Image 1: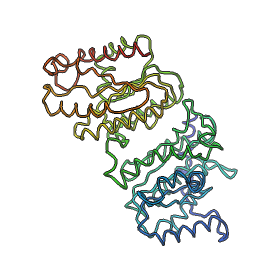
Image 2: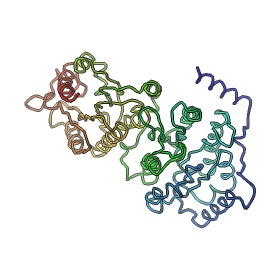
Image 3: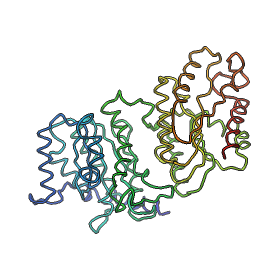
Image 4: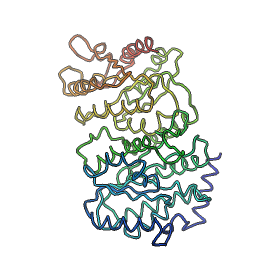
Length: 456
C-alpha cells in the first residue's frame, strides 16, 4: 500500500511540475571564492590540460568526491593513470541541479570519454533540512543522463544505484532511495546506459548497514569503496578494454524476456521481506530448472524435509545467471548450500570464456553467502556420442571449471553415471542428446542426494 501511495505521489508530481528544482541548473554558490566554484574552475583547467587523454569520468556528490580522501588508496590502485585515464567530477553536497550546472558550464566539453560513471540523488532525497519528492529526484536523474548524452554521445554511461544510507532497511531515507533505484534502473538499456547495483553488497543478510562499511551510515569507508570498485571494474573493462574481460563474466540482463525480469523482481521482493535460512538453493539454468518441472518428485525426495529456493531459469546464459545472482537474488537470506549449474546454453562461446563466467558466478556467490557450501555441477553430457563436437566442448569447459579453487566448494559430477561403457548418452536419459529425461534427472538427483545427505 505504501508503495502504491508513493507511486501515486510520483505520478501527481510528474503532472504538476514540468520543471522541478531538481532539473534547474544551478551551482551550490555563485561566490567565486566558495570552495565549490574554486573546485569547478580547477576541474575546467584540468580538462583543458588533459583533453582527449580522459577516458573515464566519475560524476556525483561527496561519495564520489571522497575518492580523493577516504577512498584515495582505492582510487590510486585502480584509476590513477593506466589502464584508465580517469577524471573525478564528484562534489560534496551536490544534487542533480548542481551536476546539471556543471554539465552546462564546461565539465563535459573538450574531450571524448569512453565511459562515465554516475551516482547522484541522495542529497536530493534528503539533505539540507528539506526533502525533494521522489518523483522530482527521478526526473532530475533522467535530466542528468540526457545532459551527459548530449555532451558525450559516444560514451557509455554506467548508472550506479544510489548507495544505501541509514542503519536499517526501514530507515526513511533508505526507503526513499530504494524506491528511486527501482525507477531509475528503467533508464538503463544495457547498451548506452548500463546499470550497476552495488550498494546492497554493503548490507548484511538482514539489510543492515554497519559503520564498518559507512562510518556515518552514508559515506563509504575504504571497504565500501572496494565493493563499489569491484562492481564497476568489470563494466569498465568491457567498455574501455573490451578484449580483457570475457563476455560470459559480464553480468547481462535478458531484456528480451519481460517475464524473466518481472519474476526476478518478485523474487527480490519476497527475499527482502524474509531473512530466513534456506537449506538448499538451486542457482542456474535449464539443467537445474528441470528439478522443478521435469522431475520435481526427485527434488522433493532428495531434499526430504529440507527447505529449498528456486533460482533457475530456462535458457539462461551463464552471464544471465550471473546478473541475477549479482543483483539481488542471493540477498536477504542465509543459504546453507547453493547448487550451481550454468553454461549449457553458451555453446557458441569458447570453453575458456564460459569457464570464466562460471568462476565469476561462484566467486560472486561466495562473496554474498560467505558461509554457504557451494556445489558446482558440471555441464552435463551433450551430444549422443563421445567424439561429437558438442561433447568435446562440454568436456573442455568442465575441465577448466574443475580447477576453480574456492573455500568450502564441492564438485559433484554425475557424468559417468549418465553414460554407458562406450561413452554414449543413452536415449533413456536424453531423447535429443541434450535435454535430460525424467530418468536422467533421477540419476543426477541420486548423485546430488548423496551429497546432501552427507553434508547437510
